[in-house]
Length: 485
Image (cartoon, rainbow, N blue to C red; front, side, top):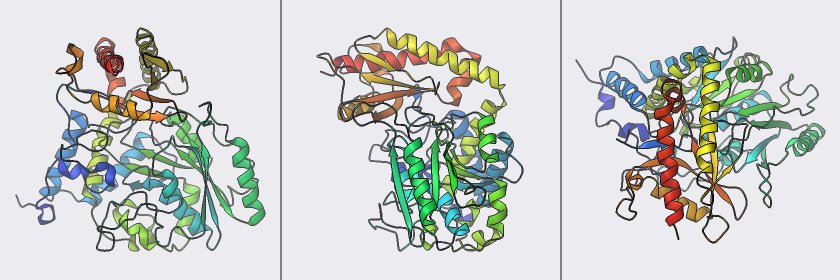
């Protein structure tokens, strides 16, 4: 059978790292900045879905099958993207009229609501209010302002190659955009910051100056913070498209009933397939309610020239023909395959009854808390009942206090290595992947043990086996912390 000449020279799984930003770049050791490879690692243990995934065997094989189908010209990248959109709509039973944009990551997804706001409010200033700052994606604030968040872009061209782009404005998107960052936590105490009043102040200012606010709400931060849906007094601003609500659900740790509610409230929702659902890094999507889509279809778009580095026509819903015609017809093969892998994990998880999933997540969370308590003086649980699949852990020093961010990053890396040559213990040999450190204050941080969809499915089928993996991960973590000094 004939092979696709456009796929010549492209190899699997290397293609999974293509069509993204610098977070996907592999170093001389064949791993990215999170010490992950774009393929399953034999005999490793994985609880790092809050940061960066090593794909499951199931996800990896599905993406490889799609790659081979592309090589044989049995399917096109556009066909795959259309299938992914259809799958997302079906799996989440999205309200009629909801459309799906696909993006290289949750960070790039921020460009879509910004462009929507600018398209429906031509000539007006946009004020993008990002809540839970420092506990959302590292590129979120830059992208929300219409700026590059990396020197590496998903769809490079002669203009972008070798350029220092990070934090520079995207041509045609950043003009007349202001960002307002509201922190996730108090810098002094580490307590969760209440965003309601600061958000209202900015929205009131926007109303007075005829600006258009975009208010974010985070459903699952890096440490599992779930912000309530904004009870901001918008007046009629949302219904008239003079204000927008963006729900950042990129961790994927939300209930379908919440998703339905947000979309019916006319919120734009950001999701990914590369966190909870264990798809390889990274894949994002933007869910746009039908009421907003109706307006977009009837409104001419001034497509920002800079967006060509992030999106092609394939990633835009077919209903927006003028958007698609304004973008390059270019194939982001890596993104298509990463979404295929994610869908392969989403399907069996979302087929489980909600009550079965919820019971498994509760059992997993409670069991982790009990295990951590056994390492008193070494591991300390930071309780968060809002998110059952992310467990945050402080690492205690022998002489008192906690390991700082730099020290915790060293432990985070050591977890991925065979440390048996340095530590006389069987648990030291196993390669374990957890969530990277997150700062709470200047002095304190946590690492995270995060269950992905595969771990929760295993909890449903064989809880003893699932928890044995967690026990081994915590044993190695405690061993490394205890031996650190």
